[in-house]
Amino acid sequence: MKITPFALGIIASTLSSLVDALPNPINDTSQTQSSDRMVFAHFMIGIVSNRKSAADFDSDMKRAKSLGIDAFALNIGVDRVDPFTDTQLEFAYQSAANNDMKVFISFDFNWWRESSEATQVGQKLARFASKPAQLMMDGKVFVSSFAGDGVDVNALRAAAGRPIYWAPNYHNPQNLDISKVDALLNWMGWPNDGNNKAPKPGRLVTVQDGDRMYMNALKGKPYIAPVSPWFFTHFGPEVPYSKNWVFPSDNLWYDRWNEMLSLKPRFIEVVTWNDYGEAHYIAPLSSPHTDDGSSKWVNDMPHNGWMEMARPYIAAYKAGASSVNEYIKEEQLIYWYRPAPHGVNCDATDTCMVPADNSTGNYFNGRPNGWETMEDAVFVVSMLKAPATIQITSGNNQRVFEAKAGAFSFKVPMGIGKQSFAVVRDGKMILAGTSPKDIIDGCVCGIYNFNPFGT
Ligand SMILES: *[C@@H]1O[C@H](CO)[C@@H](O)[C@H](O)[C@H]1NC(C)=O
Ligand SMILES: *[C@@H]1O[C@H](CO)[C@@H](O)[C@H](O)[C@H]1NC(C)=O
Image 1 (tube, protein in one colour):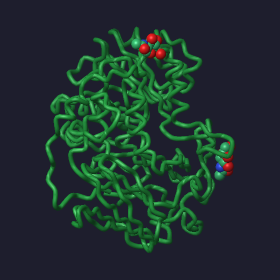
Image 2 (spheres, helix red, strand yellow; image 1 turned 90 degrees about the vertical axis):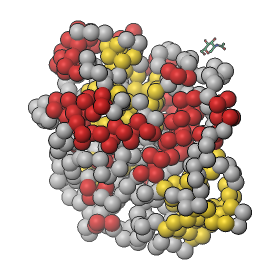
Image 3 (cartoon, rainbow, N blue to C red; image 1 turned 45 degrees about the vertical axis):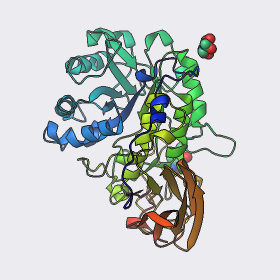
């Protein structure tokens, strides 16, 4: 996804970036000093049972820290299903301490019983809360969740036995007693239909609609805004959690980061670091993990360019800047694309053609539900310090664009075959490369693979 410069070094930051780093005079939604802003990344503990020591977390910690991520939100299920949870939490907290990172627990209420397990949640928290790498906020133990609207917060706080900063992801914040929470996370980083699927004609809930809903409910309390690059999942009957849908994601990563620079929320959560099963990972494939069944669409599909693209945006967001331009330290071209057009027919070999448990309503046969919302295009983001010409070749489709200094996005209709990219300035090619992954008019590994490629 990222093309490395072969003719350019990294140019040092200029005085104007220091000016941008001063507190922003705009009366923004965060109502805080810019230095209060933090970026978290959602980290799935459930798929790292194979890690053997704290050292196995070091590369994730170092990489996230270097990007400007302040803390990992460690998503955990329950011991009766994931008996390795405490062991892996110990490793994660230790590695974070060793690498000057912070972590906090995010309780996944798909697994925890919100109606009866508030005390167990508080007790789990108590076990880890005093470790050095625990993220503290206003002197309290930061803790988050996925879902959990019905949890007994008083019981949870009592069992934790110390002040907690409760920042859950309630799904219906409009029904909430706001006095019970310190902040709220919105998970829905994708345009949707209001019912956890892709938008349909006449039913569109934008990510900005979600921002407004949460911020209205919060009445000035801190908002954790989601930033996600993608959503595709394609589990069939081979696992008990069969599900098969996409949210429209094409240029989401670029659009959403730009939105963050105008919204300026108090906190951002990258959704996610390593959820390979839903294809919204930005961590490298080498981050140690087990196969939850998603290797069919994840193998050979790195997303590393998204990670690099986030770096200047995170710096700009933390400085309170409204533009990323002054934060681009290394010129690069980021690209991503699905490996096949969305109309190819894989019915004969796809793994979701047979019946599976559909008690969740999340299972669909064949192409992922919402597949038609994904555009057959190659997406490119230029991050430049001076204007240049961008040349994109997707199969037989060739396009030339004039890019200004700063971050800009372009797209080219998907063409079968080789994918090549070049940046030309003053008659010289300053960046160029051909992707190792061709687009094919067929079925990658036999399946409907809507996970994008890039490295
Ligand atoms: C900033 O915005 C808040 C919330 O809308 C408002 O209550 C406050 O008066 C504004 N402050 C200034 C200085 O405009
Ligand atoms: C699963 O349930 C959803 C919601 O009821 C439905 O739309 C979908 O067609 C079902 N999937 C299958 C394969 O029947």
